[in-house]
Length: 374
Ligand SMILES: Nc1ncnc2c1ncn2[C@@H]1O[C@H](COP(=O)(O)OP(=O)(O)OP(=O)(O)O)[C@@H](O)[C@H]1O
Ligand SMILES: [Mg+2]
Image 1 (spheres, protein in one colour):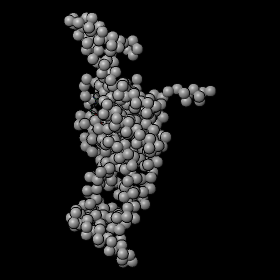
Image 2 (cartoon, protein in one colour):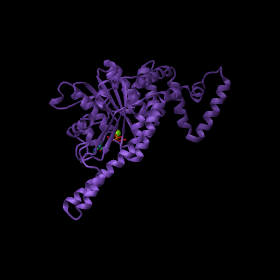
Image 3 (cartoon, helix red, strand yellow):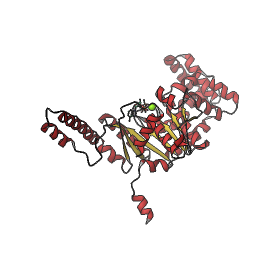
Image 4 (cartoon, helix red, strand yellow):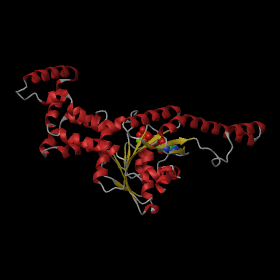
C-alpha cells in the first residue's frame, strides 16, 4: 500500500521543510544556527515559498548581506536573485525590547496602563536584561508571524544557550512568575482587608530593600501594580506559544558541530526536547571535515597511510599522507557522532562541510544551501 511505502521511505531535510510551517534552529553557541536558519529561509524561498527568518544577533556581515541595518521587528525583503522569482525571502533582526513593548500594549486595558508600564524603570530592566527574555521574545515573535502573518514558512534562529528549555520554557516561565506568591503579596499592599498579607508584604519589602535598594523595590512594586489585570492575557498567550512549539507543523532542527564536546551538548539538547515531547526532526552537523572522493569510491584512511609509506619521500607520498590525516579526522568525527545520530533516529542527519571562507553573502548562503539540501 502506498501509505506503507511513504511511511517506510526515509525522510530527508527537504521533506521535513516541505511538511513544516515553522522551523526552529537550535543548538549550542557558535555551531551555525543563524547561518542555517538563513540558508533554510533562502532555499525555501527559492523553492517558491514566502518565507521569513527571525535572526538573533547575526554577524555584522551576514546582517549586511540580508539587508538588515538595525534591530527591527518588521521583516525586510531580501533580494534572492532571479532564480527565486517564484518565492520571497524576508528577514528581521529580533528586537527584544520592542517585542516586549508590543506585548504590553496588546494586553493593557488602555494606553494609560501601557504607558505606566513602559515608563517604569523595573520594566526597563526586565524587558532587556532578565535572563530568558530574549528566548521568550524570540518565541513570541515566531508566534506572531506564524499566526498573524501571511507566511508559508517562518524560520527562527535561537539565542546561544546550553539549555534547549530556555527557549521552549520561557513563555511559561513568565506565566509562573506572575503566579508567584511574592508577586501576589506585592500586588496587595494597598488593600486593607488583608492586614496579615500587608504585614508580610512589608517584611518582604524591607528585607528586599536592604539587598537591592529601596528605589529598585519601589519601582518593582509600581510595576506589579501597573501590571494588574494583564496576567491573564500574558498567561493565555504563553499557553498558545507553547502549543505552537509543540505542534506537528513546527520542526525543531538541531545544529551541531562534529567536535566531541558540542556533540555531547547536542545530545543533552535532544534529551531536553524529548522530555518536552518534542522530537528533533533533523540534525545538521555543520563544519565537518570533507571526505575526498565520492562516497564509497574513495580510499580509506588505512589505505592512504599505507600508500604514503610505500611512496615515502615523493611528492605524491606527501599528498597521500595529507589525505590519510584528513580521512582519520573524518573517521574520528563519525565516531563522535554515532551516539547522537542513534539518539535522534529516524530523523535525517545532514553533514555540511567546513567551507574555506566565511559565509557572509548571498552566494555563500546559496552554496551552503546546496550542500544542506543535496
Ligand atoms: N559550514 C561552514 N563553513 C564555514 N564557515 C561557517 C560554516 N557555517 C557557519 N560558518 C561561520 O561560522 C560563524 C558562526 O556561525 P553562526 O553565526 O551561524 O553560528 P551561531 O550558532 O548562530 O552562533 P551564536 O550561538 O553565537 O549565535 C559565522 O562566521 C559563519 O559564517
Ligand atoms: Mg547566532
